[in-house]
Length: 74
Length: 214
Image 1: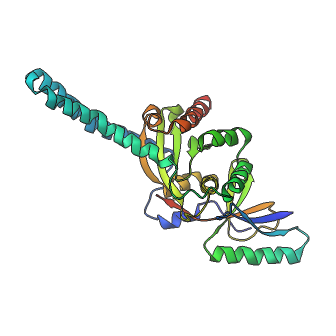
Image 2 (image 1 turned 120 degrees about the vertical axis):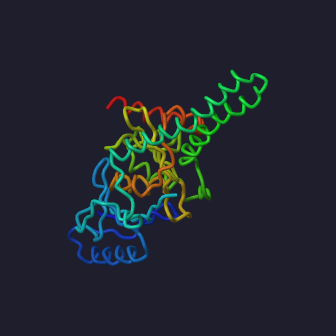
Image 3 (image 1 turned 90 degrees about the vertical axis):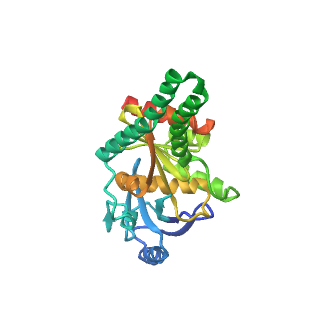
């Protein structure tokens, strides 16, 4: 089961879940993902022990997609 | 999947050169030269006053004090990037955020973060120590520390979520992360270590050991 998780003030929030074969759940996850991007979140897929990838579209085959806020120099 | 290798936040700092290994080396040398430039004149003036006019010893002591205090202030500024800052949203959210961060870290880094508040991440440029509002980068076999001030724009996040944000950005694009961050200081690890909170010092020791053993 793949998950779309947003890091927010509550620690983290699960926004959507889907499987590769469940088109309806995936479409709902895609819509939610796009809504979050519009609100300024950034999509990231942790795809290795020390590696992550920035994504602009929800990858169907990812196990976990994390939405984070932008960073900036302090 | 539409992927991007570069950190999207780079778009907000288009004028900056990408912070690669050569950039870090150059910055480290500049900081070293700068330290010598503002220390040596005070040391020389203090010594000269003591030799030429011993009666003016208090003035010489002031000059020598400047030679000691100014580098200490810079090191303090560097170490301060990883000090906890901002509102402490540690209620219900922090344990949840800690668990999430723990899933991103390995066992050893998770344990170190629990003790020190800093997440150790070995990457291409060196060993990073990621805090809530900044990061330290240990390079050159553990002989130099670069201090970066960088944080999440959302100040309402629990502390561990702030660390997780920076860690994910670092893992996405290490050089991009160093470019977006504001470089605050570079110097010898011992100068930064003595200005770190005591609880954080083992993290710097671990980062140095990690780089030295690589």
